[in-house]
Amino acid sequence: MPSPFVPPSAKKVLGTCQACFRRFAIRPTRRWPSGVEVATHGFRRSGDLEGCPGAGQPPYEISVELTKLSRSHLAHVELVGLEARKRELETADEIDLVVAAIARPAPEGRRAVVFRRGRTVDDPDAARFARTFEEAQRNLVASVAFEIRELKQLIADLDDRIARWRPAPEKLGLAP
Image 1 (tube, rainbow, N blue to C red):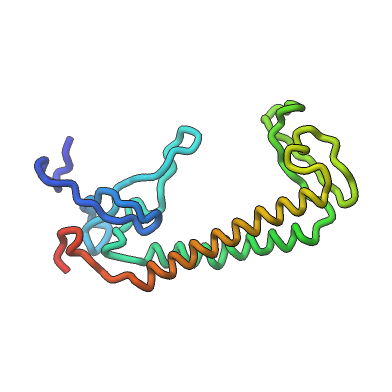
Image 2: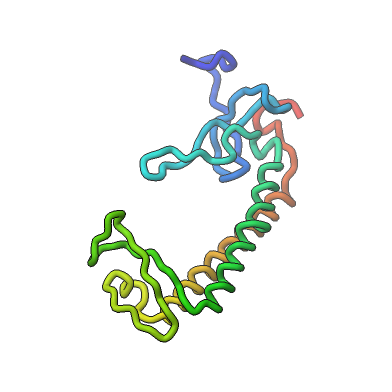
């Protein structure tokens, strides 16, 4: 059944999600002063629809507040956590790693393998990743360092979007 707010012949209006920056239909709402919000959207994970945090929020053409909150969370929580994890890995004497249980099946399909400094791991599933502590440490530190670089780039991209933002309700057919 069509929405009572939009005539069936009306063209769908698209707005930009503040979280994922993709374009989706906007719908009328009384939750926000602008009177519009981005429609529900997300992605499938294990068959379930995971919602994007920008769904139900004003579009980027109207507000940048969710983008600012996301940027702050990424910089002050996620990045700090990754940098702490990297330092922890660089100074560790032991690393617990969960591996997919292929050669040695496990009830949940995965199991923990412990790498200890100065020892070789004789485990066919772990060997796909590393045989020694030093190799496992080097691989994990490199992986976390890559995540840190990617996250810093994302934060810089959000900084740029925030700096360039100007309200543009006219792009949605709304009065300024």
